[in-house]
Amino acid sequence: MRMKKFWEYTLVAGISALVSVAVSAGVRNGTFNRTNDSNTATSEQVASLNPNEFGFLNTALPFNSTTSIGSAPDLTPAAEASVHSVVHIKVQGEQTVQGGYMDPFEFFFGGGNGFNGNSSRPVVGYGSGVIISSDGYIITNNHVIEDMDKIEVTLNDNRTFKAKKIGSDPASDIALLKIDAKDLPTIPFGNSDALKVGEWVLAVGNPFNLTSTVTAGIVSAKARPAGQTNDGQSKIGGFIQTDAAVNAGNSGGALVNARGELVGINTMIYSQTGSYSGYSFAVPINTAAKVVSDIKKYGTVQRAVLGIAGSDVTSELKEAKNLKANSGAYVADFSEVSAAYAAGLEKGDVIVAADGRDIKSFAELQSLIAMKNPSDKVRLTVNRNGNIKNFTVTLKNTEGNENIIKGSDLNKVLGATLKELPQQTRRGYGISYGLVVDDLSNGKLRSAGIKKGFIILSVNNVAIRTVNDFRKVVDTVQRQQRGNRTLSIRGLYPNSQVMTVFVDL
Image (cartoon, rainbow, N blue to C red):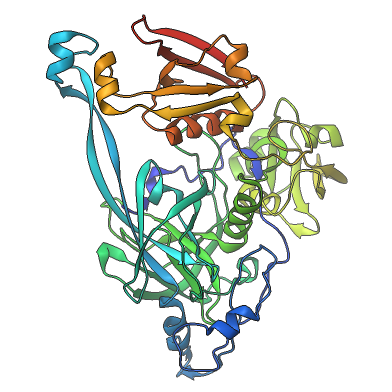
């Protein structure tokens, strides 16, 4: 899968960026020790492990990384240990192509747009992933597996498995996969907050399908901003910037420190050509670990929200707003339901510290809030017209309350069981795709007037070919702030006209 280019994202924490994110504090900082020459942990060693704080069976076996070569650390033990836990991912799916295609059946018999209609074509992509639990859980990037129907994982020992997508989070570009395997080698979680600029790191992955590739560099910067997702939602900031060479195919691979600890998931590059040109970026493992832990436990990410919109403090902003702080997170506005506003913050405030940690940028604030869950409290230090004030904020979720949010089960959310239509049935109805409402219980679809047998063609202008297509639209709408949580469902009953039904979530 093509490595995300950094220029595809905005490098400015814009006024529209809402602070919302998640990741648990207190990440384990144990070293990876190896007591034998085996490439993988033995069954006895795996069985003796307790799940880490994120709920994954993650190795912590000893090896000595104190040796050095000249003034540089000896990175060979970390490289040898980590390559066995990085996998090659192959994905297959369909891509919709707009215009320029004619379906002869639709052109001659109706139901299509002739030469202006959409068509689909098969696509194959490649990427990387990291085994984070010996029982088969794998972390990768969302953009590697997004919209793909088949996911195939190849281990370093050339064994191949079909992978199931457990869940994903576009805001952090992180996804969790599962394969049916046991006693797999893993990389222990490090503490990405403890990384220092100038520290040696390894990027491990499969660039250009060159498997088990290791490149080295240093941490060039931390807390880089992230921009927005494809659907306009705020992305989680705080990327680790390195000069370790990363290219297409490295997406989802491991960023490892000199002690052999997983400190990041390689995600994107800065490039004007599509190839590496000196800078690469990784999601900090503190963020990524909490995301996949929430997905595993709740089916969705628990996103703690301050409810502010803002930006970095720049010299231009300082002069324009007559600010008394040289750096920090500037509060430009509040969301409709705002925990920060309820706690007493005002527009024009500059957040200079959170939980005793200095805040130099909006992305740093995002990273810290990413360590929280709804109902958690955060202590904010604010510079207000030169006066220092302290506030305790009780964080909310994206729905404006302090509850844990469960992942969407279509039957529970909508009261419906959806089923894909066989090709022959679709052709008989004169449609090329769609889902049928196979069963109904008391729920939002029935309340909106939809009956069993209704064929769903699109939701919010997104063509619905699979149940996963429908689920992704529902998940996106559920992540929206209040006031914009409506499904526009376009479909028909067999042998009837197309109609549109609106469903409020």
